[in-house]
Amino acid sequence: MGVENLPKKMKAIQVVEFNKPYQINEVKVPTELQPPDILVKVAVASNCHTDGMVQQGVMSGPLPQIASHEGAGTIVALGSLAAERGFKEGMRVMCGIPLHPCGQCHDCLGPESRRQYCGNIDGHIGVTTDGCFAEYVRADSASSTPLPDEVTFMSAAPLACAGRTVWRGVLQTGLKSGEWVCLVGSGGGLGHLGIQFAKALGLKVIGIDARDEGLELSKHYGADVVIDARKGKDEVVKQVQEVTGGDGADSSVVLSDHKDATSIACGCTKMHGVAVQIAQPDDIIIPFKEIIFRDIKIHGSLVCSQEESKSMLETIAKHGITVTTNPFKGLDKIEELVEMVHGGKIKGKAAIIIDQAQVDHEKTIGAKY
Image (cartoon, rainbow, N blue to C red; front, side, top):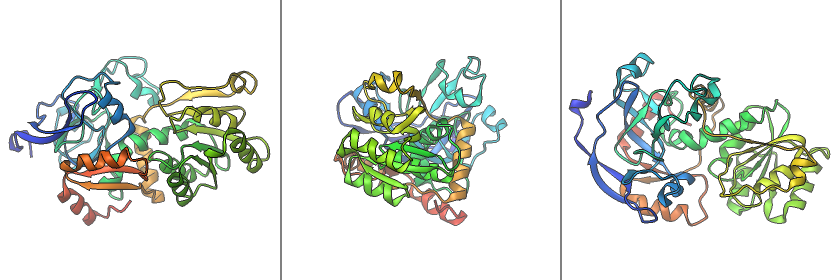
């Protein structure tokens, strides 16, 4: 198509002022592309916990800023380096979040699983630069991922952050098929994906959640054991030990930002085990005995690298992993989306269909997960 054939203006949902409601504005289409860039006509974009942090000013991004770092759609224009990397117009993609890593720091030079940690970067779309709640978004081909035909835009949007994050979190446990993993916060947007990813890798899953909706979703997606965190840490740990022969889970992943979540995860993990911290509370609270007396190790984890993202999508296509979504049609439904997200009863992820035509078309190529 080329940028010369694109509209000059587009609708977008913006953070205009911190701690204020979103605004829908008409803005310029981002057609000024650098060599690694792809311009994506957004089909679906979704809401993430981090969006609230952006709106509150925690990420200190410049204003106004287009919201959402979870998006998927079709490439309509691209830079020369993106083309050399195999991207092309008409390709369906899951947008990458990092924008223009330096390519020269220790993280960029590898290993592969650390490249997303580059600190010398232009920004992260929807976090510190313009994001996906718009008709078009500029993304970086170095972090974006082509979609298998089997994976839908509605799944790919939340996978762009939630999926990438929990996929890497499960990988970082280092567990082998047949071992136990404990997911604290198993019934949320990340958790229900984490259960499916862990099961696809052959792990046995203990799901822990503190909401009726979360417990229900954990059971639905196949957790081998589901435990109500409202019973308190001692009872939760007791139940985990009962099903693991007294040792505890081989590793755990913390997906809840509740003040007790990491403490519960550590208590449920066997001695000398690893607890992978994904949730982002202001403070991570861990009783000293878990680290000193039980030698529990805390391992932080961010989103996937590009190669890890590819392996995630291949796993989804192979195993038929699905994403629970709450779709809203049109950017003007943002207030309804926010109301649902903050109502505390949401199951899975909230997403906006921005381009229905793309969603309808993908059915013709067999997109089903």
